[in-house]
Length: 292
Ligand code: SF4
Image (cartoon, rainbow, N blue to C red; front, side, top):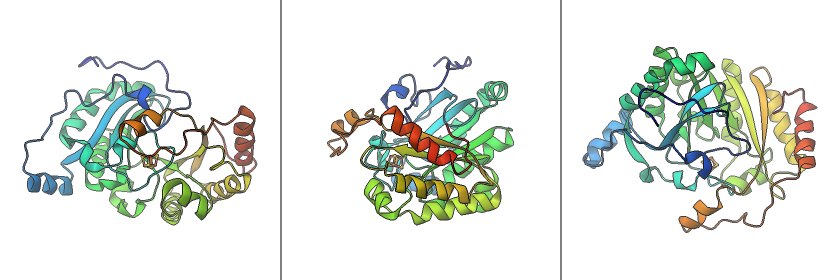
């Protein structure tokens, strides 16, 4: 990427989400200060205070991860283990690069005019952004001080880590609702659904805009009864939800699972047929949602 002359990508990605390999081209942490020589205890202290974080990469995207052109920052560390994860290399916080919050904020400042012209902003994604709440809070408050639109992309599983002050600096949440019934949620993620529901309730009560996201995986999440439960959850937050995104599963992450020596269990799963995608979107529409 050219310093000082930020490129504006011509237009988003199609179905890929959560930074599959294709979107990582041209992204990275180039130019960001690396702090590998910091003492471990000093590093931990700074991570606790939020001046230092562990990130995978960042990039500029358009019409994905929120409105307009956005600087999306991918945090390392995630408590979930979604079977379809496109970013298994963000599972562990220790695998990320140490980056200073001030350095990222300087980057954001540089893109301010692009954000303003495109009605974009920043999106904190991952991994799971709420694994590093102090770091996220600094980036969010710094961005708001610059008048930049802010967005969190999260499963909500660690929603309890988000303080009220942090949420005051959040304009939009992309809330991944990975399933509507407990059993399917657990099969998909290895964790429980309840924290996501609690976080959605909290966002709706605070009036923070939500884009609800659901990944449609044939044979895993596509049971109409499961989709119906997701739709009911989203409807319960309808005062805050401005759109629902149904994201068709595809195989973009398989190579990463292999490279990491992890057991990828969806190798034989096909992307959903267009009819199934449309049928699933219709379930959300029947609950009065605007669906993409
Ligand atoms: S929430 Fe799931 S899809 Fe997202 S980074 Fe974690 S494991 Fe991957």
